[in-house]
Image (tube, rainbow, N blue to C red; front, side):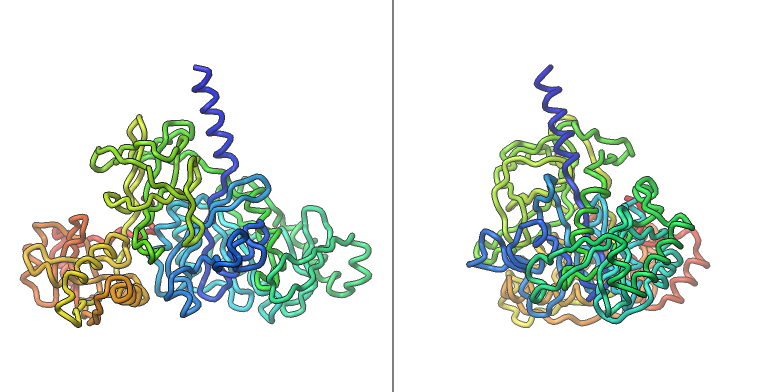
Length: 534
């Protein structure tokens, strides 16, 4: 009995040390740069971009895929685990490209909080708004970082108004800039009133020195810039725009920080906020809405599958978010969908594309299960007491294309690649239940998914293919009875996803609207998106 109690206490204590969060942003807002600087300030790297223990061998970056490094954009999500101030931080780095969001949606299902990065010159952009809706649907607390303040940009007060008007979050500045965008002197930390002056470092590669100055000295040295900043802070005090942990955790307010990830201004403040303000790993609800206690036997779910992260080994990894209990490498869990035992002998902690064998993990941690061929995105694994976590939401495709293999002799490679990339969710693969299984239709949220598909198909599986866009403009969920009618209509095609869901595809949106009006008994439901609660 005592051993059980001690084990439960240990799990709760370890869960309390975990912070698992995602960074969301519009393309080019500085998300990847901020990720690298978090690693720098946590001591995981000695200079931005280089792994501390491997500095002589390779660079550590969240953008590990060759296509990402060629283009300088984030295409696939990655997991970076490091320690900071006695806490274990699991950073889920998400794609920021405007046309690639499906992987981001899935990763947010594993996060407990999010940082929203805004370019001070651009403010809220369409992708930012779209991703925030996903955070809102999952009740994720959101921290805000106004980035690139060392460059010319918009009035920060204007940006605060925009955040509240468009997103519905009440910004509560924790740090506030002294100086205008492009003439950044430092920030006032409202929690103590001190002025923190930053000094630049060469290319922002090392930690910036921070000089804390009392308000009297700051007023003398910074002049009008200080006066304007303090007057603005007095305005915040008057309207109650102050840090409130309860409203932050409830998703009503967003603690706001100002800085420049490129030059390291404000990075430490933001990383400290993850530890001090972001919630520790919470008890997760099961599919019925009941909370699975943190101290319950080990359980979790798969939110991502990725193949060929290490081309030398040609393996694949299932990313498993631990939700309860103590995970021990080698333990046998039950695979929820099949009820079969699943061995965790090959378990690893992830740091971008790098991995190390992991012996134990706790709620909030992400474990890489290597060569877990029987797992699918959304699968639950558990020990002892059964549990099923909510399915990860599917996504409404907006683009459709047919893949044509350039060299028919590579057909087996094509099928192998198609099977793997469908399993990872790189694209959705739609098949005609009564048609040719060789020519499936590919569906995606954005065009970048198609580019990733053809790039990986050629480079990882040796099967070059070209995509021919299909004319479909809309997709709706349907059923077998309605499908019988829909298949007789020109410009409509009924296909099935891998999970058996039937989708009706329409070349003409107006025809879809007319059919809904003329045949209200036909099932033509919108596809559940990541914006809906799982």
